Length: 436
Image 1: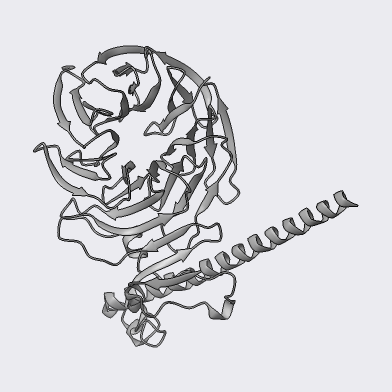
Image 2: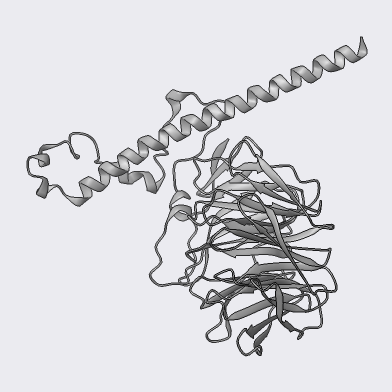
């Protein structure tokens, strides 16, 4: 089902998820909200963009992993299988595998498709708190309440080694840019810098007075950042092993941090219902936002830094244009927020498939008809074909592909409804048999 509210495009999926495309403008230089994603029934614990920026995966305390297709003509996919809260999610470098960590002591490796297939990786003896792929996708690192950090070889998820040194729950772990080093942090209030190849501890940082919630590497690999329960963010130089910066970042626990790929900015979020963007060159706050209704529990930049996402205790996910770099241009998320409106799969027929004429994104198709386009008189001299005509023709082709995608979505939705009805009929027959 779809409609428009206050100029926004609203799509409700057959699985109960809700996607809202926003058209509101923001002041220059400030992040702009372009998507609201609703489908989780509890706190959003983790977010990860695919490397092509077309998908976002989220984990939640409702035991679900949801794969969000950020183009409105594509539906979201709920991945169920965990028996406990999902604490972390991570896309690999190809976008063909999603890892999730859960309180059920398992790691699952998902194929991001409607089938929802996954392989279970077991090895931890307690709640698994985090999972992160190496940049080349060859390895996965995990941390757990069993006080260990484990490394697994991909694609099969075979156990490679354990890194031991923490004396309490380990809440976060990740690789550096080339996978040769790793960092972890947890409830023992320490951050450990690891040599992965030697399977040994390089250094243990002890600066804060509270548990560590998240650790991360600067994109260049020479800075480690950690956020903690005591509202602080600490940064250390991996070469000198010295503390180089610390911020009293939020008015309470800081739950997540993420570096912009340029290395110039950092995103943080916390219990005070805000996310903040830091200019780490100047050591100052560039922007503070209070859009979530309650604590902001997760945040992430995409691989380009043009977009970012935040998730909260309110179960909502917001996708933003970051507006951090002057040369950034809009791509899939923003442009799709004004794309043709989604379909009501319960009532629409194939003859009803059409574009939303009120959508600015569709106005570019005007003037790209056959008589005025690529097949017109301008073909007599290819050098004279205007670039605008070529662009219009290509956009027309894209439009036809979009119609095909919508048709497939309609068929998929109808198939789901039929399956649900068949299941209810079978359940009713079973109940009748039981009473007879």
